[in-house]
Image (tube, rainbow, N blue to C red):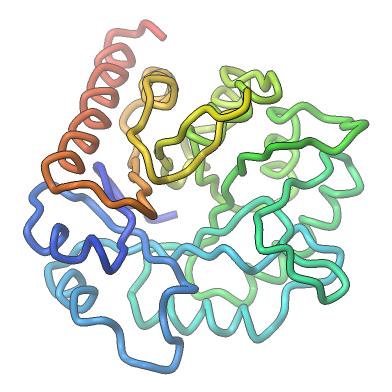
Length: 278
């Protein structure tokens, strides 16, 4: 898989001006659902392409964990957008978003069972055959877990990798949320992803409310996800990492400071990796 590099930022129309002028942004991620598949690309995105900034196409509505196979129309849309953007890969989620024609409006977690792995593997096979670039799948945050899970989150991720050829979009903010809310073994999940299968990393902010941690993408990144990013880099070396910010957009200097904090965490981790000390 051809990978992005450096520290990136999720492209949003509200951040287009920042990205026009920002230095050192290694790549951007564009939400497929924010683009018109038949219209022209927004001018700021065209400028990023002209500058040679690598683009990842990110989807939230494919629903690869559904019992039904992925809709051909959705796959065709992703394929068309990936080609127009010159995307290096397409990323989606280990989740389901609809059942029986009913849309959930959320990325819902999958039951961590062998049966679910088989369904997911078949849906992934269909998606990969329809896309012109490699596919990477993201671990999701959840406020609930299905009862009777046969596999831990690390075992589940290993099962996905064993049954498919996909890359992993490892979201350390989602992992941090699940560690706080469900007791997920974050270190085991980090260890479950070989470097050669890691496409890139998501980092985002959140807040604690009512005893639960909410991955909001609208607050400063706490130390927890940055510590996981550092630990990951200490395990596997340099990794591309992208900041997601979706609402309550901060001033440029705050956004710049968040990206610098990510660079610092990566640098600390890489220094440990180079020194041979995890």
